[in-house]
Image (cartoon, rainbow, N blue to C red):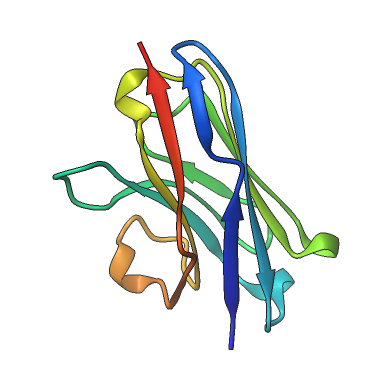
Length: 120
């Protein structure tokens, strides 16, 4: 059973930086495609970024050029570096395993989420 645990969220001022970490266990992390999603209050969960097991990446237009997804297979960890944060980036951020898709339904396992709050 795959388990995913996110960390690194918090409160940051607009223009600031945060690095999210997703620690994976219970599976062969190096063979999984992984993704980051986020959900703001009153809104649906939306795609943020994804990375294949080979390292190819994809980003939502809203974060392209500001966020960077990466992975360390030796540490079974997924990362999301978020630069130049905006108030509209405020959301609970989730990591997910099993796909490279922008469609959340294609992912099989999810973490519990970590809150990111950007003050303007």
